[in-house]
Image 1: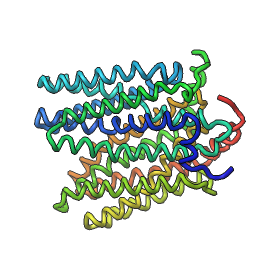
Image 2: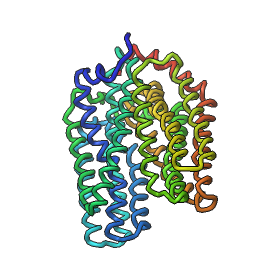
Image 3: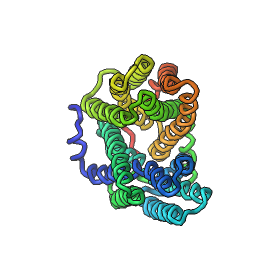
Image 4: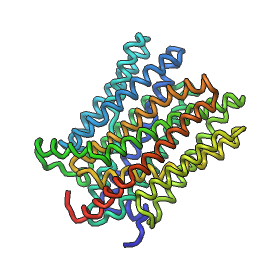
Amino acid sequence: MPSANYRSLLRTPGAAAFFLPASLGRVGVAMTSLSIVWLVHSHTGTFSAAGLVTGAFAVSEALGAPQQARLADRFGQTRILPPTLLAHAVAVALLLSLVVADADDTFLIVGGGLVGGSVPQLGAMSAARWAALLRPDRAAELPTAFALESISNAGAFLVGPTLVSALAAAGHAVAGLVLAASLSVFGGLFLATRRDTAPATSIGDAEHARRRGQLLCAPVLLLMGLNLAIGIFFGAMQVSVTGFAVECGAPGAAGPIFAASSFSGLLAGWLYGLRRWRATPPVQLVAATSVLSLGTMLLFTVGSPFGLALVVILTGAAIPPLLVLFPVFTEATVDHAVLTQAFAWLGAAGAAGSAAAAALSGWAIDTFGPQGGFAVTATAAAAMTLQSAAGLRVLRTSHGRWGRRGAETH
């Protein structure tokens, strides 16, 4: 079979009809956390309150995402999305009302938690649809499909925060959260109308519970550990780059540095998904984590924002293969009846790592300077390399199942 490309994938009947709405909704999801920061700060005048509300949002999303995905696997995406989106819209409206009414911080924290718990898991649902659409006849194209998902996610987190920051800078913090919720809800509603590509849900409660037991298998636990580490990497990198720019007397340089990393990741992800690689996915994983680990070592040598930008271009390019390989291994390991849950659990692990890293790297920077934050980043990258190398046999076994499952239906 010739190497798949993005155009041929999107020409697959039904593919563009679910991928594009999910991508639109992802932009809204990517805007939500930062829009809450700007909204709460604009009305309270303090970042401490904004941090508490955003923290409640992050924790609630990490806890709620797997439960939402479990319901989607059991009852179907098209049945679960409408009430989820309604709950999200109501939660956003409640938080806006509380902020405008100058409510106590405790109520704002509760409001932020409700918004986080109801965030639609469009990324996990879109990835599950690709697996349902391409299995079993076009399974070899799944890595390209997951690369497309990675590009969509990276683009969302590049465009979304930029829109929020622009609106907030213009004095429209409320509009930022309203726009975020609107994109999430409308993207999710359009996705819910696409019943033709939704994964099947034909098993009973007992059988579904039995298959959920696969989520505790060694490959999934290893992938959760890797996602926890990459979440720590992202969280620590954000705080450390900002701290380095401030120490250099150029706080405005943080934005261009993040943009350089994002564009590097977008380009690398696009190129990675265009070709069929000779190396097996387990070997690719070890290679990508090793490059990332070596790149983080260079962070300790930089002496200027320009030098830091060059390093984050390298580390940014090493990330997309990981974000493609994680769902590849997950799809190869987990029964499709619980696949959305598996994707959501990996996302929750990454979110938990990012939240923990923000606090840990902040303490490290205050204590040891930006080098302390870089140490957290490098440790996370090294942990990914060690985990991928130690779990090479487990991942090879998982990858072996991938080929054998090509003849199965789901």
